[in-house]
Length: 566
Image 1 (spheres, helix red, strand yellow):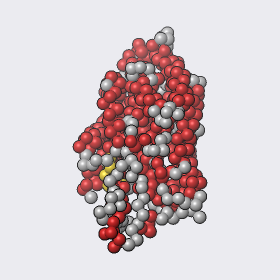
Image 2: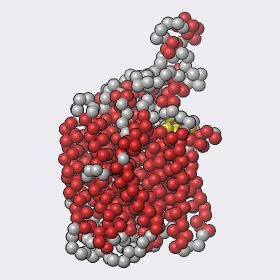
Image 3: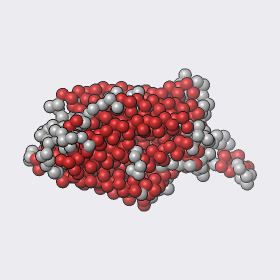
Image 4: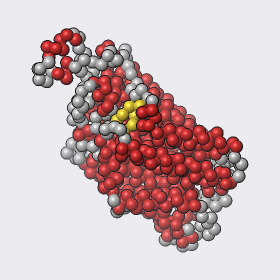
């Protein structure tokens, strides 16, 4: 039990911060200083979770993945990498919130508690090892985000956005649950490792039912990461939500969604477990990626509100990331396991920092509850608010992928990885990605033009500096510049994270199979031994010792047979 608690310490820190805020806040005076205190308190505990995850990543007692809590959660360098990223996003969101929420008149302790609950749900998502833990953690995150989007209850736009997001989110959750039900029917289990073992065996109509399950679960994941054609909720939700929460959604929620999706594919659906679908799935994902990036960029061109521009750009970035995911699963020989890449985690870090910086800058220039998010309202921002203007311009340049920013190196690595799949099989998709990046540069740099190159506008001169908000902008800007200057180290960390998924849920497979794991062995199913006495006759015969090894007593041979769907 202590071992489990140690491995999941970052998750428990976030949960404790949320619970403590809910319990103590009613006993504090309802004044402005108390409301600002919770922002610093949440940031401190998010920072503690970040440091704890980083220490476990570096010195943790595991080689690849170590199960915890009866195989429902695990600690690995992959999960800890994303827990650290989520904690960083949570820290910046807490720092960016006090000034904005006080001016909006909705600064309450439960706001900061909900941020921590959402972060806890995301951290559990990326650590999940079963369908049950994945669904529960996703719902913890979603419920908190629904409330946060509608937290400005005096704003009709905020309440409407929260209601739309809730209704469409419920549909997405229903699709995910239906897909999981089909997977359970095919495999007879909810844990990733047992699903992978069961789905290798041929079944009557198995490809049809597995394809239907992947269609439903894939649609649900696409909704969570705001990829087209499941992006309809994003523009209204991004515009109506409190600005710091919009940054939280575009960074942490997207990172958690992609991390959970890729882990699900690697651990339960990779390689032989997918059968013939393994060759079709990368093509489907690549097609959706091209559609998402094209739709997102074209719609962003028509927007004049910066929050809506960034909402549609997040749809485009989801397309870029989906194309990067193709490099993970495209090779039927499991090259994704043999040649791990850190491009997707690295890209998510760059996108998260740029998004958080942009929305922190937008939160800084509001006054008396008025949001200045229209492009015309930003005219003169670079002269009247040079610090916030510089941070917003830097974020836009990084999102556009202008060299030598962090966003440029992220896209470059994605392109290299996709071109390396099966002799540049996806070259046309890469060409479309590059063309979309050129299109996106127009609306990103257009915002920069409004900040610096237009005549004096309506941007108010009065600007009350807030220490926590200055820290939020400074940390994100420093991250963009520092990692952009030295991208190699961050890429190595991302590659180390992906390496921990090289053989799926490696330690779990080792516990069930008791075989040395390699790229070709990770998902092999060994037939049960019918006659234990026959084991002795195989000793000494080369190549047969692994097959003769007995099945663990707690794993009955009958469980190998999937339940099936009649």
